[in-house]
Image (cartoon, rainbow over all chains, first blue to last red; front, side):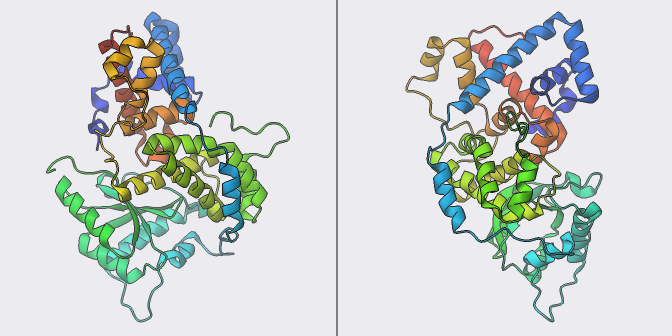
Amino acid sequence: MSTDNNASEAMSRRDELEAMLPFYLNGTLVGADLAAVEEWLGADPQALAALEEAEAEFSATAASNEAIRPPADALSRFSRTLEAEAGPARAASGSSSLARLWDRFMAVPSGVAWATAAVAVALVLVQALVEPGGRGGPVEIAGTEQGDLPFVLVTFKPQATLADVSAFLADQGATIVSGPAPGGIFKIAIVATTGAEYDRIVGLIAAQPFADTVTKGRRPENGG
Amino acid sequence: MVGMTAAPGQQTDRELVTRVATGDRAAVRLLFMRHHARIYRFVARQTGSDMMADDIANEVFLELWRQAPSFEGRSEVSTWLLGIARFKALSMLRKRKEVAIDEDAAAAIPDGADSPEVALMKDDKAAALRRMVNALPEEHRTVIDLAYYHAKSVTEIGEIMSIPVATVKTRMFYARRKLGEALQAAGFERGWP
């Protein structure tokens, strides 16, 4: 993991303006940031030289990307695959995002005592995340203690059960903090203070039968 | 995304996704034609593999086909697709253990037979800069690609990469500083850093 997550304090105002130039060039800078860059460009002769450097980077990046040629028959091959596909998954009429989430991976065997504290916390978080305004998709929890924890991104196999997931969460102190993002991705916060501990828990997740894909996210810097 | 704005009389991406959600295969083909090349390039830059880029780009559009009903327009369609593409690329890389995704992972795009030193001597500044962009660590090059080539905002890049906005800015800062240092080391003038 990069060390630049904690480096913002070391950036001078000039550095911040330099970092915003690419977004000035691509037209996505707005508000106070846009005003600051425009003021800088108007007041500092060095700013125009900096803008030229950014323009050169812009051209170089575009050229590097455009040099990559997709296969000419990509559309025809995709069309053949598409014809074999069933229709899109229909959103359950009248069902909430949480209900769909339950349908997705919480096929609870009858009689299973699944209401552990960890699961309850996880489900409350999930409900809080997917319910407001009826909007699913990728979301972050701002201002919660989970926001600064190491995390991992996970997708679950369709046959994953609540019992499997809840047992693991309870044992590891892991918590679902956001999701599902596109592709059914869930962000799971992990209580780990060292990189080795983080790696161990991520390895355990990957080994679980309920886990489909596991992608490392924020990892503690210390301890390997 | 640059060039993805619908022309007059042309349906927007979001309108097409709405059609896809009803099972309209023609609509997903239209979206494929609009976005496939950029998704393919994005994945190729992530993985350094044409084969993986081909597979993953197809999977991204199949995911679009399957998940269109759940798209609620919170993001631009292109941002949604890039987010799916990045996750699938990272997942496949980890499964195959071909590339370590960390600070030390350099771009795997091959570019010519000359050694970097020889090539730099022969290059003009523009060519050198292209080589240096390609050689940035993955997490820095991706921020550069998403801003300069995919025309994404700070917020959108954070969404695609699942990182905070502040991290996007610091990664951009270090990416640009590394480019500046590399240019200076190669003997080219640079105003910053």
